[in-house]
Image (cartoon, rainbow, N blue to C red; front, side, top):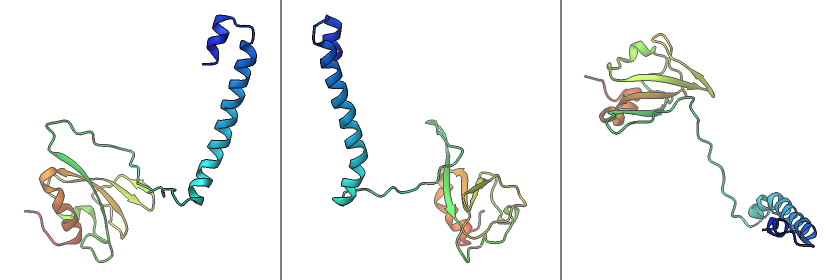
Length: 142
């Protein structure tokens, strides 16, 4: 808005532009630095929930039958200490990534599953509900 007087060549245009510029910059600096502090003081701050960002994404098309599912391996699960080959996964199920303590591993058949590993599993949508049961040991694939 402060540029309109400049465009029309008004006498006080530069002064008007300088005032508006100063007010905008001051407002941004004051509000930008104090909003988080005031939000915390008023107890309206929202905690940021960290979500694991994987280096890959599945952007399913309309016809796809595949789904990605993250499963965390817990103490006492059937998969703990086993190689991926020993899990007996069917051909339509693939462990695409292993998140181990924040580091991503591309698994091989000989990769051993450890407690607290987060497995990113690609499978048919119809099998997604059975993935956690498989890692836990509650179900065996046909």
